[in-house]
Length: 241
Image (cartoon, rainbow, N blue to C red):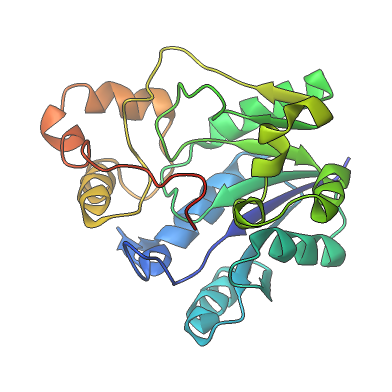
């Protein structure tokens, strides 16, 4: 069983351009995502999927510096970008990550992968019923399912890669993984300057290495001054690019 991690990353962002290469401590946001994925211990290969836009030359250069393979493809058709990665890298299972999640927990990634494998499902996500902070979610999908939806997914489903699967769950074996306690009120993704202020404060406290979700959220429970920084930020709707 060959397991592939794909991290989608690009410099373009409507709310925080260039966020994937901002420095958090001594590492870029992208490097933190790569390190967390690698430290999960469940991935045979990690590939960064970026675009052919000139601005994303910087993403490709960062990948080269990190020693991580980089695939460059469509700007808006992210599913097609993923399929391009699959054409170049053999896999049975794909874990999907986004480069706006610099606080990913390697232990959580490994646990989700173990549950997925035991369940023998087509697709599993922690975001169908959200109990994790936004920015720590894990998605796992069988490679043949990603290839199958190429002929089915249109419009925003191609941007969001896996959304066709979980919005058409009658066609696939879909599992939603929930973890307790419910920490879904926390926002730990990077999409705005206020998100940046919170994440930067976390990294200043904990340092450059990945942090377990329990350790991080226990600390944040005593820092409402920080969690309030981005509590007002609304997540984009699924149909938004």
